[in-house]
Image 1: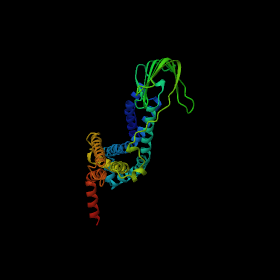
Image 2: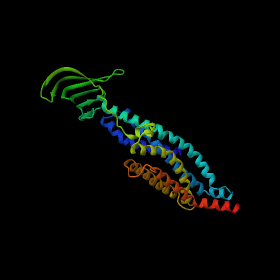
Image 3: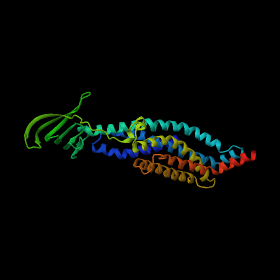
Image 4: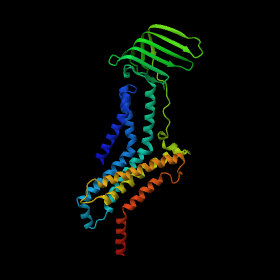
Length: 348
């Protein structure tokens, strides 16, 4: 399980890196910000990756147990499949408690930090992140910065163009060169512009002016951008008080994750028992298991959207997904349930 979880986290992190490193290469986000964004997304994904790792590991371990005839030897000694179920359930319950803490508390907190960090990165500017010949938008497009040539090592730029749109005016600054002074502790970086002009135009056509300068300083104060307000970043205690369909769908999703951990582990045993053959291929049960998980995950994902949109009523809501998986588990264990029933009946 640890090995599978490590592989899944690595694959997911690589996928996120491919998505966000392009921003670092273009200079719109710094390397440290991109690293933190990837870390937050990996933490968020743990609520799903951990149950999947447990699910796949149970299938692989139980299938190997059957192929090596250990399960047959166990049955010959009078030890039933309940021994495997108890062992797996003990681990699954422990994992479900951990997943519950991730889903109910850690995940919304990680989403909140993710959105705040993303908003802060969009609102700040750093000359050392710029590439030559690219227009950069900050403050949600209210400020545009362009430099014909940028030297990151020297923290300098040539032929710099800055357009800032205010409430009632537009300011355009052109400078032949610019350098950024290091920010003091708790302060904003300062851009020193050299040999340039400043143009300011008002919307009413009044008080327009052109100013030539040899040296001018511009404080690059970050303008606060409100982070994205998404339901997945709302704390669970607030969701409990929410009356909207979207809040209820998100709450049901968070409550379903620990339940899914246990049900997936049990269904993994059933998949291994039903689809593993001593003489068959090694991957047959694993392939069926992946198909079962894909079906279940897509079902609960659609149920969440349908509950949030009012297509499916809040009750039963996402519990339909858990019910589907529970019924699937019972179907997988029908031979074992029938055998236990006949054995109990014979004992009487």
